[in-house]
Length: 284
Ligand code: NAD
Image (cartoon, rainbow, N blue to C red):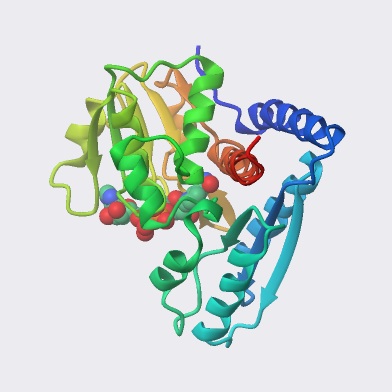
């Protein structure tokens, strides 16, 4: 029997507890947590992500401030806004939706966000804390969301052979480090990996984050493996993941669907990071 790792349902459970936690702080006289969301330009996918994140904030009681800037804004203007938000004591978290238009240096933007407000966890200081495995930093939302999903289903990582396919800065790389911190034996594959199948077949837990539709076929998956699909692509007008879900699910013990798996968990982790920033700022 295959269990579907239902990110939508699990998110609701986590978010209900976040809502209660925030209500408790409000009843004790504290202000609301707040997240500043910055969108540059009109990329339709980014617009959908931003709407979802803001709705999720609203539902749990996080104040969301929204800054929608034009496609042609200069880097200077964007950095100016971030510096303002850095200084605003009412702002706990700052999220700049990626990707950014070409004229803007994304790295510079990430490094301008104050690390204690960097709820996406992309600032090198937070990445460094993840590598050092020390408390007090922010773990990027998708890796953290996957951990929350495993926690909910009681999936134990320690000692497992985990293969992560994709080594991007926002998912694969920090996820690999997080899993290593949880005592997994981690193999990281990428576009230059010689024999992908050899590594995926060895995995007790297989996580794919490439954005290549249906890269992971059933013959690449070990019987009984846990399969997590981070990828989001469009194929024939439909949203699909990296995993050939219908066939692979016959072999997997647990599997995430796309949509409804990792996506909602990523937003849930963003809420968790924002509440963490809020508590750090108010010392509660
Ligand atoms: P990225 O471009 O930064 O990284 C992609 C990685 O995949 C690279 O390491 C690359 O080497 C590897 N790769 C590409 N083709 C490959 C192949 N044929 N075989 C093996 N490795 C290959 O991308 P990213 O930002 O990490 O995003 C990856 C995917 O995850 C995208 O589809 C993105 O939309 C999705 N994503 C989903 C969520 C979510 O919440 N579900 C969050 C973030 C990103």
